[in-house]
Length: 258
Image 1 (tube, rainbow, N blue to C red):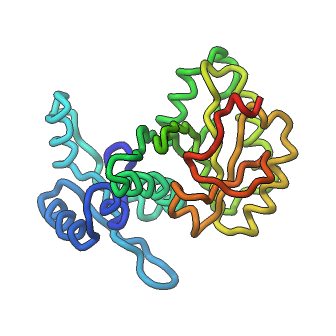
Image 2 (tube, rainbow, N blue to C red):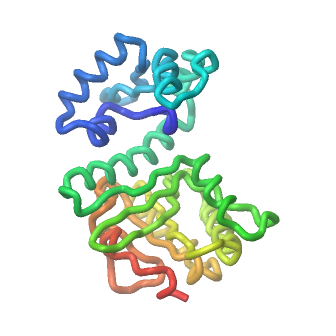
């Protein structure tokens, strides 16, 4: 939670519990101990789940377990809870939910699959900077980076969580950054996974992405909600394929596209 800032009750359950009721009970205890703080964003319709952030006591516990100086391990509770008013809250929670769904799928697979790596936006940017040969090329700013291991395959990917607010020109420019970055990368280029809020948005966005030259070297696959709430399944539509949707583990190796 320190790394990913905010998780909802369903996401906590996906990561660590076998039922949501058990997650609710445990998070209520942790909140009472001051290890986490919680808020519930206002919704025009219905009610949102509880959202949890790290509280001061939790930061001290994490520092102690990591062997760090606990005198400096403090978080601004007001700053943490300010996420409730952030215009980026839904975007952050959506991207986190993508990864927690993969964690849950791995837990349910009885050892045949797992999310081998999960980096937040800052971590994804750091990964890209570390693996580039050319520090002059701006690295992409993805919403996350991950590695899904299943069916004997390992698929590394950047996540682009789209809320429908960007224009096609902005999507084109975002994809162009990946294309420019790919030749500078040390090792194979990860997949770029775009998740769109609707099937219609996905279809229109794919037209914009196809107009970017060089996607053979920065392969793209798209999906849309609600199907992408199960990202391990056959919801991925490679941009350069006419064969239909495939499993996340079924995305071909990048070398096969070059």
